[in-house]
Amino acid sequence: MEIDPLDAITPIDGRYRQIAQDAAEYFSEYALMKRRIKAEITFLKHFITLAEPAVVEKLPEDWVSRLDAIGEKFSREDARRVKELEKRLGHDVGAVMEYLRGKLHEEGLDRLAPFIHFGLTSEDVNNIAYSTLLRDFSQQLLIPTLVEFLEKLSDLAQKHKGSIMLGRTHGQPAVPTTLGKFLANYVYRVAKLAEEVSTHRFYGKIGGAVGDNAALRAAYPDVDWIEATNSIVRRMGLEPFPANTQILPHEGASLLFSKLAILAGVLSNLCRDLWLLGMLGHVGLSRKREEIHSSTMPHKANPLMVENAEGCLDLAGELLSYLSRRLLASRLHRDLSDSTIKRFYGTPLTLILIGLRNLGKALETIIVDVESMRREVDAHQEAFSEPLQLILRKHGIEEAHKIVGGMKLDDIREVLERINAPTEVEREVKRILAEGYTGYAEKLAEQLLKEASTIIQRLKQHD
Image (cartoon, rainbow, N blue to C red; front, side, top):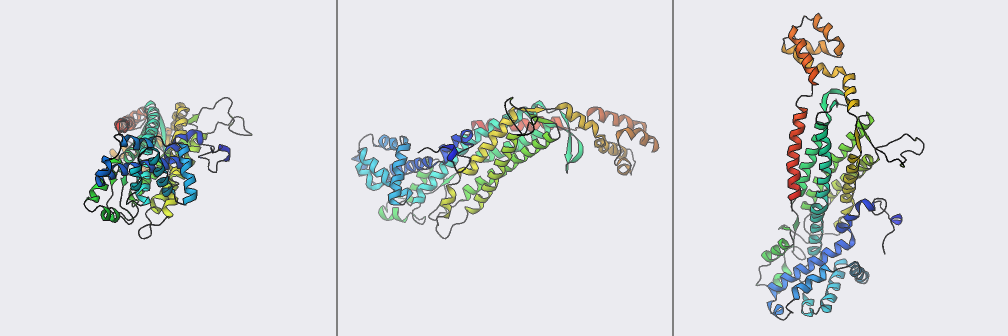
């Protein structure tokens, strides 16, 4: 039965279902079942070829394609059959095994039925299912979403690489910079983190009850099951992890979640900075004519998408940080506490997706008030006291910092006359004021955006 969004327990499957529906392909119960089926079938194909060549000779010529079709055609109706079996058996992977045995008989592959899940433990199937789902979500959905977001942010930074704004430290006026340089910093940081995620290594294992492949060796001692199972894991697109108990240790997933928690933190901070720039009147977001942003104040145009993104990303970061720590705990050779936790992988990862998409929507409607930023710089002429005191020190005036402290530019001529400053000091000050005192901001913005563009192109090509 399909869930009515109005009846959903979490907003991911309710309020935000439309914006993140494609995440269900990786984190739904159906998606997990389908990956378990694929893992079982992939193992069976390679196991039977290695261990029972005599059985293979008696199979139909198209046995491989028939077997693959079971996984490829696995439908939601099939998933409901598995759930019915689980109700009776009380075991989710056991239900998958029972379902597959029935399908083998239906497809005329009866000889394979005794070898379903041969020598495996449930976690041999589960770890491969989860690892491949995380890998595919990362490569097929998250990275493309990040690329789309980065291109929007890059365009905004490029457009305003020379737009002067007042830099702030500790929330107070500092010295001028440019909006483009400020945003280019984020473009570069997010691009670097995205590349870290895109090159993450995903692991898998097949090891039996306690990780030693004792059952497979006992049944078929002439096969090198260490090499064989590692080869099967590689065929599933994963890297074998040798230090196993019944479970695949979770360092790989923990590292991924740690990287994503950092990514969420950086993106959340961008949301806060955009919010503050909006509060200062430098950026705004366009509002559709029919939209209401306040139930009582008709004039309001709130940064709703930015605030939504910040909340989603903050929550994602906290959950991912917890997951990265908690998954490392497992009593002796395994306990089931991690099994419950893994079922919630989709919550923080989908929250990142929602946050990215809503932040991207905000960038599409952002309005930068260049004149407002310029006026703020002009209104805080004390921001130019830094170059003034440096020029004075350059000409040997030791107490320049004290002399200049707190002064306005209107007082410069009086100060220079009082201290008998060399005439070239005034010329240098005028030059700096004319240039805006933004240093290498525009050049650095160009460099950052160029390097980020190179990373983005690699992300597009990464498979």
